[in-house]
Amino acid sequence: MKVTVLFGAGSIGLAIVRRVAAGGHIVLADYNEQNARAAAQTLENAGFTCSTIQADLGSRESIQQVIAHAQQFGDIYHLVNAAGVSPSQAPVSEILRVDMYGTAVLLEEFGKVIANGGSGIVISSQSGHRLGALPQEQSDALAITPTEELLSLDFVQAISDTLKAYQYSKRCNVLRVMMEATRWGKRGATINSISPYIHAVFIK
Image (cartoon, rainbow, N blue to C red; front, side):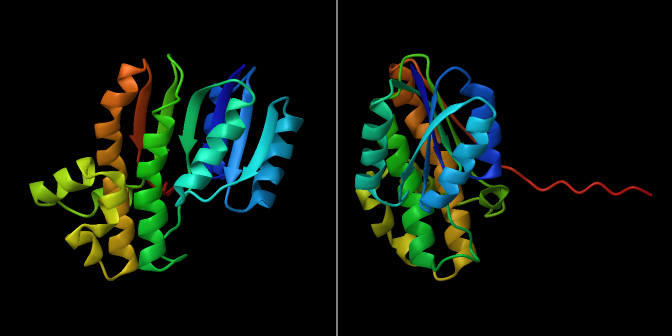
């Protein structure tokens, strides 16, 4: 059976899995397992087969546990990452741990097991594009620094406000996807990122 793993049981992620997971098994991984269970109930009412697991995106061990859980049901064909914390939800250190480091680990670990023909998507943010151009050495560092060393980069440690932490994390997400795409490609799989934006419609 084909398995789809969703990190973060929010509206955007659920809309995506509805499109790609028909006929397979959906694993809903969320820091708050109650949220995951509620989302699973909604999906099951619509005819999907689901399971849930509590997960901390900022923990390699937790991510590995999600993978082990998912592999009980079949090969992992789809990864959707819609998890993370915003500038209003957490301090700088937690934003960097979850949004920057955690997403990098997620791409790395799932890149080891994603099935041939599989795909992944990271829900980033337009906020990452509002950061402006970075020095090339910073962009390179965010893209290719070994995952366990990411949070030790001098310019990352110098971040002191939550918005900048979020923006750097989301820029890092896009750059890590670009870097990991080569590894995923060797397994016959694809990985992409999207940056949602709020569009306002004004009617006269």
